[in-house]
Amino acid sequence: AAPKNPGGGLFTAIAPTPRTVDNVTVPGGFTWEPIISWGDPITTEAPEFDFWNQSADAQQVQAGYNADYVTLIRNGNGGNKAVLVFNNEYTNDELMFEVGGSDELTDEQLRIIMAAHGMTVVNVRRQNKHEAWEYVRSGASNRRIHTWTPFTVDGPAAGHEAMRTSQDPTGALVLGTLNNCAGGVTPWGTVLSGEENFNQYFDTTGAPDPDQKLARYGLTSGGRGWERVEDRFHVATEPHEVNRFGWIVEVDPSDPTSTPVKHTALGRFKHEGANVIIADSGHVVAYMGDDERHDYIYKFVSKNKHRKGNGHREHNKALLSEGDLYVAKFVGDGMEDGEWDGTGSWLPLVVDGTSHVPGWTVEEVLIWTRQAADLVGPTKMDRPEDVEPNLTNGRIYAALTNNSQRVDLDEANPRLGNKHGHVIEMSEDGNDHTGLTFHWRIVLLAGDPSDPSAYFLGYDREDVSPISCPDNVAFDPQGNLWISTDGQPGTLGNSDGLYLYPVRGREAGHLQQFLSVPVGAECCGPYIDLDDNTVLAAVQHPGEVSGASPANPVSTYPYSGHGQPRPGVFHAFRPRKPRPPRGGHRG
Ligand code: FEO
Ligand code: CA
Ligand code: CA
Ligand code: CA
Image (cartoon, rainbow, N blue to C red; front, side, top):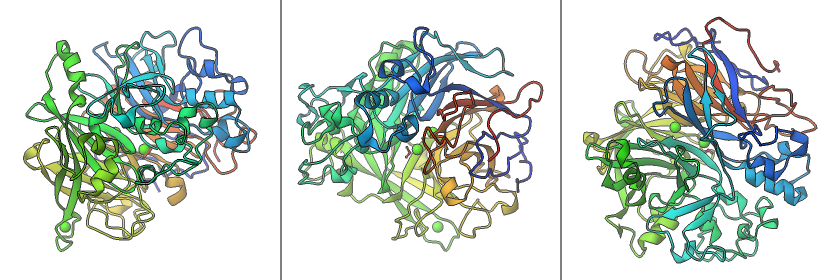
């Protein structure tokens, strides 16, 4: 049943949506419209999307696949113009093409897939606050970043021998960004994006791995066929290309001709994303998760200080090029107090240009950060996804999405075979983001409210929405925490969605579901500003259900008449006059 109306009256929580429903569900009084979907042309010359006649040339000027992180950059353009940036994490090859497996993909299909990865930048506009945001096909900011877009590499590991390839003897120029998952916008208006499961693109057949430098990153498979069209994805042939992925990238959406950067100072792992806050000292601090079972939470502290004002943009764009890297250790204070909480410390990996990992150089720590961190004793977490500071109070929230292999319990990872995941709040001691110690508490143990192992800060369970597998976290301008999910169809039988979760005050623990996404999809993004009537979310991998294919599509999101699922970004808003529900059908 739907929980009762929230005290804030922002919206009336929706009831959980059965996972077979092929539609977006929003609260009463709201409606939704797609802004941009996979294949939408982003230049005036670009071909219209044609599912049955795709090409790699067309895909490079059309919106990419599987949107994850979404942000809207307002840039003082007035209230009704903005720049929309979103990640294109991966592709569902089996939904793009009617093939039996990746070994059946043609070279052209593989190139289409490569062009559909990366990021998409478009101008957006709306008539007024009561209408939907629409993308501008001829927008001056429009840009696709894909597998052949040049990136410069900066920071200590740039140019290192292990970063050099036959195509790039400098070790400082990489083509492409891969598996861009969550992200964040910086105070200077650039976008950070995490290269997450990059391992899947590389064929490691025949590649020696004496130090487990491949295996520790999951580089153990035959890849997705990309090595058939480019040698660099065959590790035995081009052993260092794989070291050039797994970084945080920074993109400047204000200049579509700018060269994006891979920042080696932030370490190499399966980066979910990065979110920054400016410390009282002026240093910029980035919080980051490594999304793997039993991997770690990290932070980076810039060497140099942020400068206010547009005149210092170039200075600020270099802040993530040099600084210190730490990994988190959580210590519980026992359950006698009835809370999952305790203290924590940031264990140094690199400080003041010096490695704190015995026997390892700075460059080695940054390129093989997972193994370097293993040596200093951080806490093995239940898959750290999005880790983001709340800019209104400095507290940091980490989504631990789940961990089916959790056996050894600790107070920060307290559930066996953690099926539904949890959220940890961290508070830097003295609110000093450059400091080495913090306090923490679990604010959510996800699950159905009827599950006694679920925890909602003690709120009346009858009024709480069920939730599972928290993934992206975000804050609205008032500082409210929002959570989107990835995995509920498999754990609760419900569609994934977006939730408001107050963690302080009278409403603390009053989890309320705002929307749900179509069958097979995870909910990503999100960008939330209810005062501005703007909630943006991504529908990632709609129709990703066992047995689905172009001949048997399970979703047709965004219901634009193509008859096939097309991942993308939509706008949920309150129209001036109520509108009938739009979109798909009830399953
Ligand atoms: Fe791409 Fe960890 O989610
Ligand atoms: Ca405790
Ligand atoms: Ca994610
Ligand atoms: Ca986020």
